[in-house]
Image (cartoon, rainbow, N blue to C red):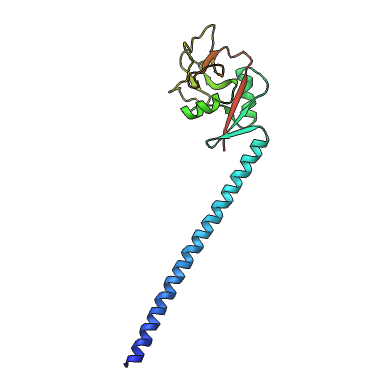
Length: 178
């Protein structure tokens, strides 16, 4: 082989490697483009759902929707209203969520009661209460108070729950995870 054939072979091999690398890079870019396009579609769908719910009176916080009633009902009637909306009474899982709900400025039913076993507070999904945000001296079970409300009239946003008679009419807050 002469010098010019070696150069030509080396050039051909370099070009072949370049072509292989360019093809692989193009395929990777196409895959990333496809993934981003799919992700964009999911985000647009979520935004549509958020916009629809917000137009219907729901509020959005931390991947959940909250509905604030404008009328007053008993705890059971309030829960039934939430269920008809595809939701349930709010379950408060964190200090941040408690503060958010407090800042809605309502005295309202939440999804907590001890109506099955006195003193054993459970959420509407059946989970036991682990962290509570009870007001001072609460729960006091004065006269069979078996349902919990958040009482906006308190000073400290993380000490606002009160137990009340389930038959009392209050506003309520529904929660829906989408």
